[in-house]
Length: 173
Image: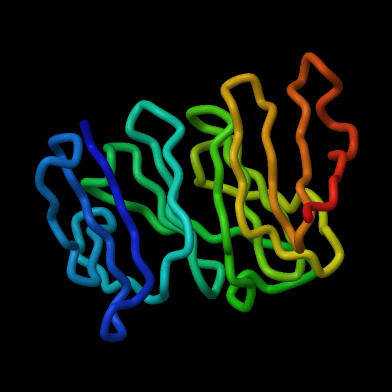
């Protein structure tokens, strides 16, 4: 099975590793990914990676950078969220998490949240958490999940328990 790992820039070059054998061996993309059939330099540092299943995954990073894959990381396509309040090129995307194969949420600086329902091809702005930047997102298969932002833990409910209501928040010690 395919595995993808990311790292902040090493010597100025973002690192993306790919494994086609479940992590037994790794290929360093050396600051490049294949978008379509073209090797392309990775323009910014990555901050988070998430896979929803069926080989579909997302990697997000600085300057609103998003790449998506549907083949386990062998090839990638570029995709950038848009927001009415902030240009995505200035928003560092800090975290990404999948709710399902095609649905994911990404969090940006200044508390912006974006959602995709088509595996990252397009994005919608969800809400804004004031200036609380979401540093981590995680979801379970039923749609429940958690997000950490500014020392607060936010809990998302699955659809069967009232999803769509504001997430509850809990201050962490």
